[in-house]
Image (cartoon, rainbow, N blue to C red):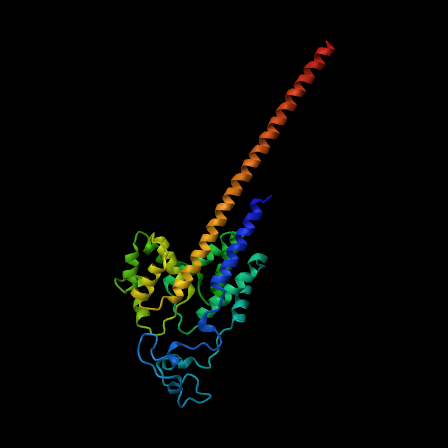
Length: 319
């Protein structure tokens, strides 16, 4: 027989396994050898402008001249060349110290991967914290840890995750709540207008900044933040909506965002199936428990009746 506790364990395993695929796979920005589009040999740049070949870009580049290439990317970020960058090991050390206790075995590896991928996004020089990213952060951690056995410790893990990425959890949570509150009662077109830079909302401001930034960085938390906005506004989470919001309204490539949406929808479909199965089993278990209690009550009543009959018979015999 499948018990409720066994189903909850299976549900948690399913959630974590899918999250591992969704959030813990490599980000192409960090794959060894990956190069920004501006440094490739394609004839068109990320925004459609003509670009020079790799050879032209690095002409005259000598060993020891890191960050000094004659290119806008190097001009903007070249001052960071050679400066120390916290490693994943550093982030894990901070996370472990902040947590101060052991993680449930089932969640340990997945939290380690989440610490690593969050760290790699945040230490990228192109990263900028915004409300949509924060909403994605809280959405992921809420879903991932909603069945964690110890709720208080689960919240402590989220705080430690933020600290490991050199972020203040209260700030992240505050921006996420503000973004969600802004979206409540709005429509998909309202969000689209903000992503076009219309109005004076926080999303409009981040959109304007992104549009003006040729090297704006997309991360999965940003994409999941947009998915959460679809949920809050009652918008069906489809690739058409994601493409419109990111490609047409924000004027950025929507390929990664659409892929993340597909994975997120697959995750939710599996979770809904698991939750439905858990409810069915819980109802069945409760019914069985009620039947057992009813049987026990009936047996106790019969015993009481027998005892009364025996006692009456004994009294009659004495008389």
